[in-house]
Length: 77
View (cartoon, helix red, strand yellow):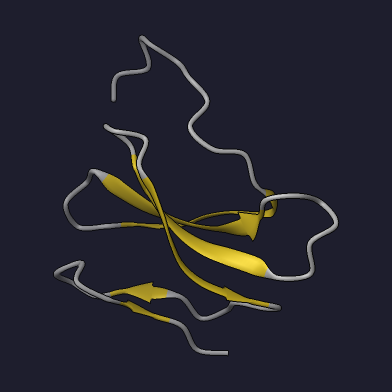
């Protein structure tokens, strides 16, 4: 990413960036798809392709950690 071609990849409410995966191509996000949702979604976003994968939904997500090899995500509520 060099900032020369800005585009919206995702819209989330009440959350945001939670971490980079070690491959440098994916980020971990937390948030709601709409402002009135009660549960937040833990989502992986591929910055190159725009592909989004929802991992988990819960009322509260805290204590997020990506493993050193990027193969798993820990959620400690």
